[in-house]
Amino acid sequence: MEVSLRPVSRSNVRAVCGLRLADDQRQLVAPAAYTVAEGHYEPGALLRAIYVDDEPVGVLLVEVESGTPYLVRFMVDAAHQRRGVGRQAVELLVGELGADGWGVLETSFVRVAEGAEGFWRRCGFEDTGRTRDGEPLFVRAL
Ligand SMILES: CC(C)(COP(=O)(O)OP(=O)(O)OC[C@H]1O[C@@H](n2cnc3c(N)ncnc32)[C@H](O)[C@@H]1OP(=O)(O)O)[C@@H](O)C(=O)NCCC(=O)NCCS
Image (cartoon, rainbow, N blue to C red; front, side):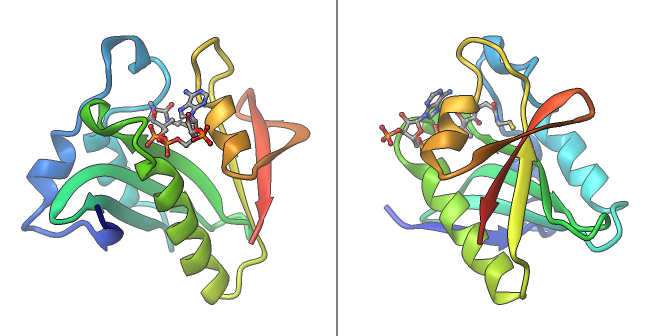
């Protein structure tokens, strides 16, 4: 299994927009199609499809406008979760942002049981003690 981050393009946009979460995860993150659309209107944003081999299985969006990269969306399709795809995608993203000269990556999430907090902690993010849009703000050095 090879995980990679690739641009969203006309050849994969339908597949990316069709990515799905489990029913009980839908309150945690906006639908993939919103992420793709919003990515086009965020100045300087980094929008990437997460691939396993040649199949798009996830999507992520990083905003940089505030001067600190902020991972505003991150999802792995329900059928591909818990196989290490998310962790590898985070490592690839960290490498890409670090190579671009950024020093930290922030993210936030809906704090509920079975939410993503454990995932972010496993990926090396720490609680800043601050919030963003009412959600706990976590950070990782790059
Ligand atoms: C959260 C999410 C991105 C994780 O992706 P994934 O590919 O399933 O995660 P991985 O398999 O790479 O997991 C890496 C580690 O995190 C752990 N983990 C994954 N999801 C977790 C969760 N919801 N709670 C606690 N730990 C979790 C895994 O068990 C694994 O731990 P390990 O170190 O013991 O092996 C994915 O489940 C998802 O898209 N969820 C719904 C949307 C969401 O909440 N996105 C985040 C919004 S900020």
